[in-house]
Amino acid sequence: MKTIKDLNADSIDQFAQKLRGKLVMPQDPDYHETRKVYNAMIDKHPGMFAMCVDVADVIASVNFARENKLLLAVRGGGHNGGGLGLCDGGLVIDLSGLKFVRVNTSDNTVRVGGGNLWGEVDHATHPFGLAVPAGIISTTGVGGLTLGGGVGHLTRKYGLTIDNLLEADMVLADGSFVTVNKDQNADLFWAIRGGGGNFGIVTSFKFQAHPVKNVFGGPSLWPIEQTEEIMAWYHEFIHNAPEDLNGFIATMEIPGPPFPEFLHHKRFCGIVWCYTGEQSRAKEVFEPILAKKPIFEHMGEMPYPSIQTMFDGLLPPGLQWYWRADFFQDLSPKLSAQHRKYGSEIPTPLSQMHMYPLSGAASRVGKEETPWAYRDAKYAGVIVGVDPDPKHAGKITDWCKSYWEALHPYSAGGAYLNFIMDEGQERVQASYRHNYDRLLKIKQRYDAQNLFRVNQNIKPA
Image (cartoon, rainbow, N blue to C red; front, side, top):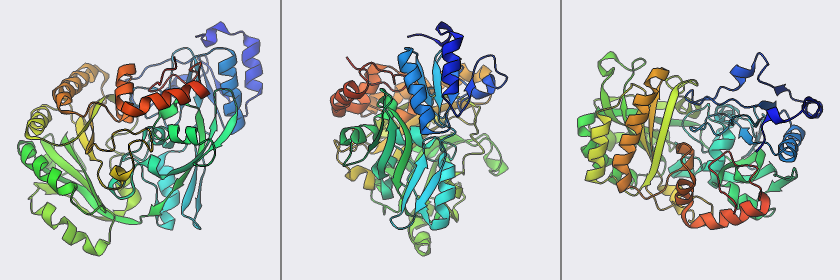
């Protein structure tokens, strides 16, 4: 592949004239700010950013990359753990200028631009008493989260984000523009619901939204020494609970405010709850949770966007991150013993482990209906080493890897691809399982030259 340095100035000037948005080059004063992404451990130096403001800009950028055989990356929200929205020396198509959210109350659908963040979607849908299932951090990009699957507070009630995707507009590797849904380009529509950015650039999404206004939720904490007891109880409880109730379980350290001082810098087994049912029933639903006598709980009624932004302040852009992940079928005593061990050794206050339950609506979708092959898994697990200081990068990475290596023998074999770093082809293939061959055929049909390769890549022959 060529880099921008291999091109002459005239071809770059001609490209710039085709764009409404601007080009950002390494010599420009805003270059270093532009190349920042959510994970500050990523330090890539693209040769050029195309800051797209409309679909025409995206088409021109794709054509320019293809015709000049450039390494190409696509950046939406920039949240990807492995920094796969950037590349060294090549062209980055930045979608942050493609932002709009349009709510249609006649059928409760939402049109969203390819560069939107989830907090912007929540802001637009909440006044109508609606929400689209997404993640748990509002600064996450709509595009990356959706194309990988989408796990969060509404998973048990309304499924994964991909289960609520109705349609998308895309620019393909040949520069063509297509609409994909169950009736148009159905093979591509199937592939993008979990197949990542392998097949083209999504410039807009159409989602089914659901009635969600206020929720009852928040964190509950138990001492890390009770991890095995709480995990055994939680595993039985959550998968038999009403689907209105979601809760992900974690090992964590409390870093400081806004939590009470007596919790600071202690390790816990915690669960973050979100109940979307009738608020008048919340006390009854939470009774068995409170019966487990958490050492601390801060649960109550709040607007849905409040629970979606609950962790934004603790986890702002610009921290060091290292991620590892797996799917799991249970929380066996041997597995929970490892959680207690490594949860007791958390190296920095923001490092943590989450297990997101996948029962309920998410589990009723067939294993071949979307590329997400682990519909039978009970949890999407993720371990993250996090710290603001680059000098701790090695420490958080080593802990994260050791924790993952201890859990992996008990795993289902693959991982939610939005939760992993750039870990190679075998890892990608294991995560798509029986759906990989079908994805490969679609990739070969629409992107045989692998223009869209800076991702969790499905590599054509």
